[in-house]
Length: 304
Image 1 (spheres, rainbow, N blue to C red):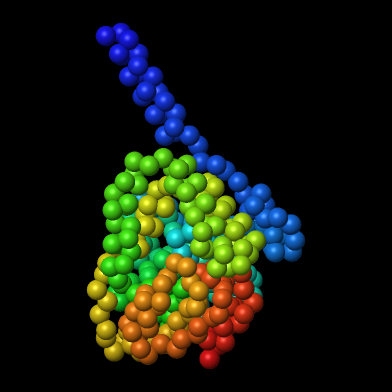
Image 2: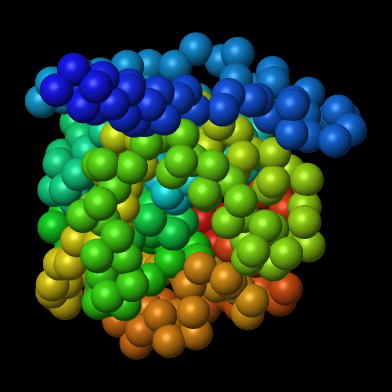
């Protein structure tokens, strides 16, 4: 009996050691091959103090910057944070009042929307243009379906309309995520970047360094699971005259490794009134690896 108990104790200890192994921590600078003006600009950008707001027991962190009467809300994708837009913000802040947030540990589209609305209200954003990419674009569509009166213009970048594709592909995996060690999840996604995302962006060092940093301690396991939940949650968008009247721009890439052509087509069909810009050979993160052309598209659309 004592020998069996000792074996069981040893097994449990080994399991605990494996499960509690810390996530590999590294920074943008650790992953970025040759520090240059881009790395310096991101480091300087990150010194700008953030605002925080408690909403239903969850702390939201966000940046408010810029000037002018026009307002712009930026919503990042699953592997992002408020500063993924830093190159766009640096260009647009002279003419726009901007909010860029980091999505906290929320698991339902409505909770995410309520947090966003609370931030907009706190900062006096009554009606704002919204730029959302990937998961952020999906969340922006939910906001449009519930509160179109709060949106001045809508830009949907590298995203998808409500669908069952991701549920079929990842719904089963989602059930196991709470039981998988955080370090294993993050290691897996860092490695997965090399299989599709980075090659599509021509292994751009900014894309690689930024995303690897997110999966190296900046994004928590709870945040990650929450973002998976948002992408998997289905909602039925309704089409009203008010929603259709909101000017819309869809930005897509012809080699997006995360949003396939069928999903791109579904987005265009959902919003036939939208203008469409199709980018060539830029991957899923054109605002990182092609920041100047991307920002030019955004500015031209918002300033029409």
